[in-house]
Image (cartoon, rainbow, N blue to C red; front, side, top):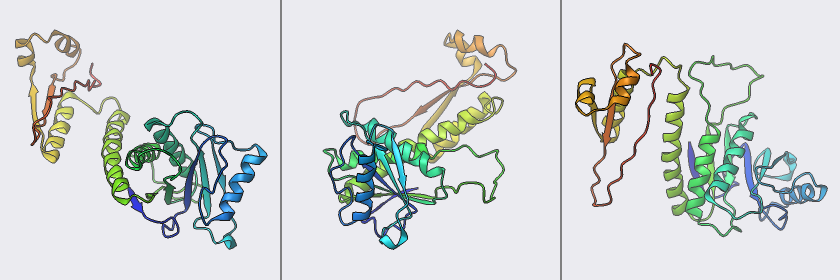
Length: 267
């Protein structure tokens, strides 16, 4: 869903996204694209846009200007210290704005004027784009009428450090993809996830990603004195499950234990 491009001009994007600091209209934001830079400066001068955190403005440059996309979306970063969450949030805003248009391809430019690692920035922007574009449509009719906005098919990140940005995209897609998978689970109707289905889903993931999977039955829980789970499950005709996933690293490293609660409908 997200990939790297070297130049904006060859991206053939429907929307180009630019990031700007608050009250910083120094430029050019896009060297060689004077029309866009002038539009942004005029928005600053008119007071319609200042680059505040989570602020955005859309421009529609004239086709004869020779620009690279029909829409230019400028998103503010604020004036506070830049953090990973700053970029994640700004990319999420961009994805949400783009989803309200008929754009299918969105290109975000990684700014060169910011003192921030491009790989980290790419990772956070990828997370924000993927999470911001997330929609749960499993049970919705696919309405193809002209009144419905288009769906974004691809995000592009443009910047100079190809290797760092590509690696950042890969990391961001993994973490954001995992979050979207959990969102899919949480958005199912309450009666979908029985303990048995939860275990089956876990085993499917383990097989795909080479994890070990084990479960504790009601009998094993009694033996281990797990009264909390057993007490809650008494209100259901579905037997409880405690799912244990184990991943063995190929290299030596610290042991990490993550405890999550997959609370099913019957509780």
